[in-house]
Length: 98
Image (cartoon, rainbow, N blue to C red; front, top):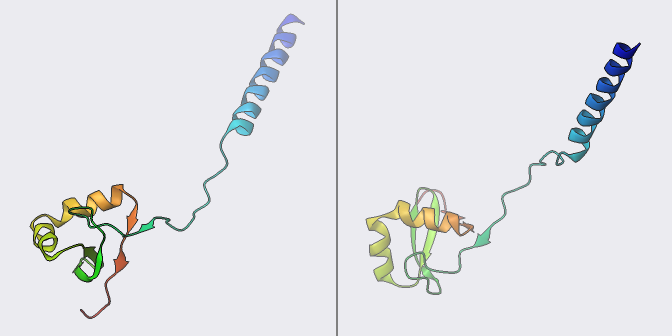
């Protein structure tokens, strides 16, 4: 009798623990479109971008504040792309065929 009572209590504890794990779990992730911010600052100096000054790199358009920043960017583009990614900047796609 004691053995069956102990088994029943252990089964109840296990059931409650599993139920708590399910109820306390975060909801499943719903895939949402990537959200970020539009580029408004030069990746090199941080100044306001000029839409006439840009580089198309790996299918993305990167804007700059001055021509000197384009030269600096071209020396290490991956570093600046990673910086913008960390900041949540979503770059425009470069027009195809260019």
